[in-house]
Length: 187
Image (tube, rainbow, N blue to C red; front, side, top):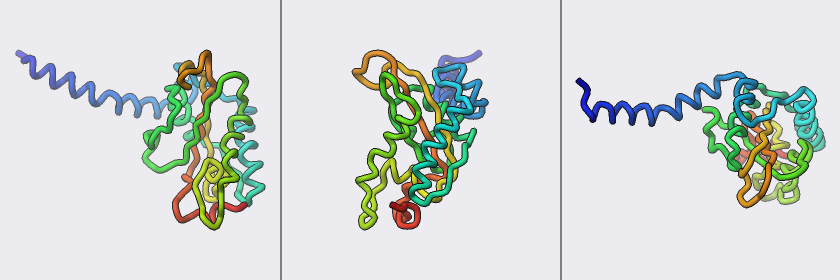
């Protein structure tokens, strides 16, 4: 016969383990199955091309090689975008470090406009006193892969009525490594 303490211990174990199990299963699922079950948009080849072109055009202007698309990073970005949380994941999406940009807006907010927000802090970069910004991650020379996702959300931006478009982009290997700016960022 089972005691009440056994059921409490079993429930506690399942309750504590569930988020880790859920995260592992969701990250292992193919991008399309994750996206269709939630709010992320299935990306077309044209969308992927737009993400890459918007990044690689700027990278070429700053001596950085072109990024390639990573389905694995895109899947992880879709998982985070599906949650409609307008904050960084804090490293929860994979064991290795990665770069991450998140932006959201209401109204018409196409891919190029979203990626353009990552370039807005370029003028804050001073090679004599390097700072690490959204722009430096985009042009970071040792970063080779990109994966992004788009989600249609409600209430991701506090106080904003209606729907928002949320973008999540992940970069591998991560940029913005303290002390490595001189060899990775070119004006």
